[in-house]
Length: 127
Image (spheres, rainbow, N blue to C red):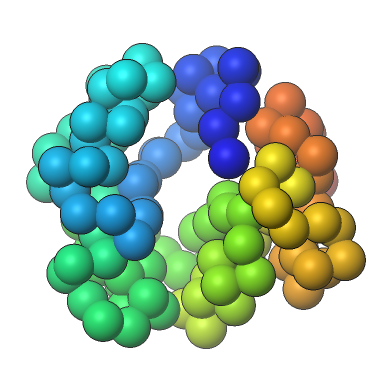
């Protein structure tokens, strides 16, 4: 899902949190490799091994981000599961078509974008 402009995009976010189905070691290694680890410190975010229900991961990530409210949370994902999980958690979702799913398959999101360079303007439009 992450593209060449991921670092600039993540740096512009108010309070980024990592929520992934990967275990922490894998997720943090991936963020390190992509040059994004400074935005996702240990002890923050939520990981698939911590809850069986993905919707519950949103609450865990928001709690670790200082009890960030669901109504101010926007998930960014590239699968229909990302979209439905964010909806189930009471959060909004921006879907990105950089994965294997197209715009139609991600259409339940609040917005669907082609790549992360569109995220900042999309988030501004959602507010």
